[in-house]
Length: 412
Image (cartoon, one colour):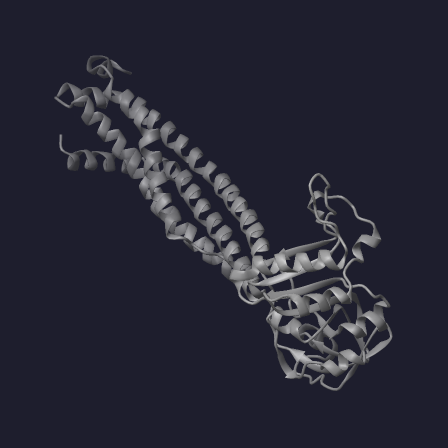
């Protein structure tokens, strides 16, 4: 019996039980759609995070006080006061692989203008902070070196703060706002950046001279952190090593010599490359988890196909016996039932792919989640659904092929 006849017989058998065939394929449809949608969300999230990290500056280096906290050990307050202005000056003067460096201090609270107020954070930085974080002033100007030297009460606002305090379309340049009863004159407005992939508003901030924040708001002599950018992304590691040597020398930390164990760092250095690697590892694990959970649906769908094929073999035992009695070989019966199982799988796979792609774009449009559909996920889906049809359809088909024709004809 040729394959065209076997295919026609399989189609007729499927068409004779439309609802049962649809329910059988439904497990595959749901499984394939789930896999494609989950992988699209996982890959979209990964690419969005990479894009946001790139926007922040792929060669950015962040220095924070205190030892490495990844061990989860709580540190005392004094260990968080290890970075000083002298460290910033030493890095600025002594690092050949660093092109921009800014001290940073931070405070959060209510900003007030007239009857309006909004919660936000004020960052004490210098002008190079804009280059490091890839920010730019869209209106007005950045504060100057003279403002830093005199601890001037001036600031540059993010667009969200402008909208909350002054309303849409207002010009805040020259206006005076208050933070913890301290007046600050607005000299500039930052260009809008929007939300990042983690849902953080990148425009909800206020920049001011670091001297002003240290003296007039926090009354402290230590820094919350130091931010730098390497000359190029390729020399980030060298810049990190250079910064570490300078800070250890400034803090008079002993190096290891012979059997003597040196002092541990009292500072922590992070790079965007390290952050990107950590985020990629996390998103990859999330994507694998989502794909594995969705893949369970495929297994359930495959079991459904096996179950229905068993029922079909049982129902059509007399038919199988008659076919074999008039010359059909066992291989013909095997191929017939395999074709039915594979046809159900592939049909469900095609519908599942279309549904998965549609759901992915619907989620992107309605929930604004980032998505990215990779071609290999569709190819993999077809491969899996074909394998599912062969794997779960083979045993029932083999059982049908091994039936004794005489016993099959007698079957009631």
